[in-house]
Image 1: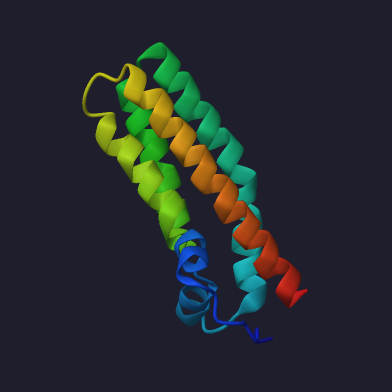
Image 2: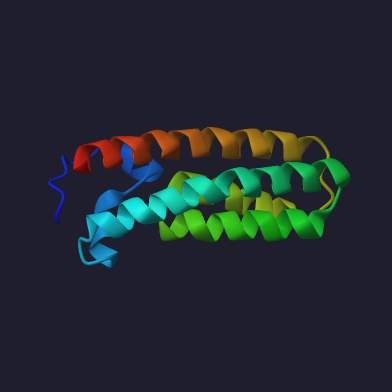
Length: 126
């Protein structure tokens, strides 16, 4: 099954680039939808780990959780959210105080935008 996708604008592609992901998965829409569903199931756990690590000052766990989330987002061509997770991963190398909260807020905003893009994509191929 192949998806006929309208050309998204640059902002949408930065949130989720379905053309890129489909090209890496031989245009297998069903696999893309399955991967999105898997990511959706994992995101709350990663965000909870990130928040807990930030609150407890556990930079090692923060780095690991942000790195794991970054990889999953990058694999699904969710560039903005992956970059937000990378910023947290890099920041975890230093003691975090106020910056950590702002970085988590930025990550959550990017995740919401990616989620909206995932939802649009899934609706367009249903």
